Image (cartoon, rainbow, N blue to C red; front, side):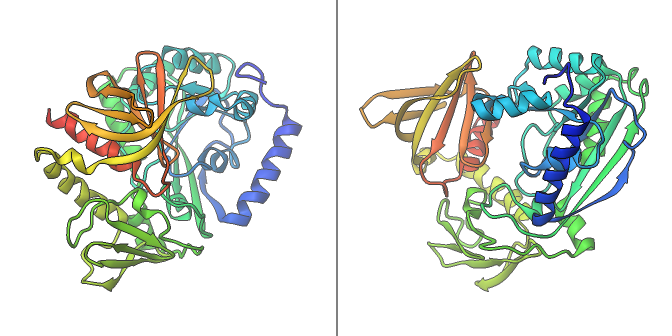
Length: 392
């Protein structure tokens, strides 16, 4: 199958039944509002992005098979590529202009497909919608088709991006037709971007304050250090460690418990922050001050593998060694003594794949840095790079 040819109705029904059975074992999934029931394609669904299962959550309640835009790294896996091609998925280089993607989306419109897109460009880490890619507004203006806003509530709490284990609880889906064909065609891209930002705004913990839904599972705090990397008590970087439901600083023994409601409880030392979102906002402010200090980058050094790929080929191993911070760049100091430097002004589309792979492009070559230790915070590296570029 492809963009031009949808999966057959019988096969689609079979797949949806299988997927629904599996997902319902993990969570209670409900639809609060669905404007797609009588909506004829082509139209586009824009959604907040919180889990790997988001495309399936949405397609459970949409009759048509959705042609989702997906990160091109996923297409480098031969088996996954076959599945994505079967559903008519559209490859996209993350956070980088890609005319190939635009052509494929226009083809999907021509063949009366339902198009699915996550304008954040990546899963968010704390349940709050991240800034949208500006190109989405330009694409919406160009397509001039109905726009449906999908809101996934409870998805983050059911499986935070930083976590290994899922949690069982409520996931609520809303599919609201926000704009009809022609409603946005005369608006500027800037205005459309603002409207999309407002429509897709979602704060998981604000939703949880009203919902008060528990999300039960094993080791609820496990691998939280992938996301939160500065202690709010002693402000040391890289000393936090998760164990079961506890999150502890090895330097000062500050300890909190992550609860099934997604909030922190006091264990050792007074509680100063109650949610991962609040903690992240605070730590990014502290990190900005740290980045301004001379020689601060000496604190960053992690064991990694470096991979590269071109065109649609799979990733191949280049070297392994230590990722270090340098003036105006990062570098891999390989185990065999070679240095692989990457200057910040050469990097394009830098992002995190899954939860501990740092990805970027230099010209047409894609690089992926995989951290040996799964507890390592790729998010820390990404935010440090962004802050350095912002300040210089």
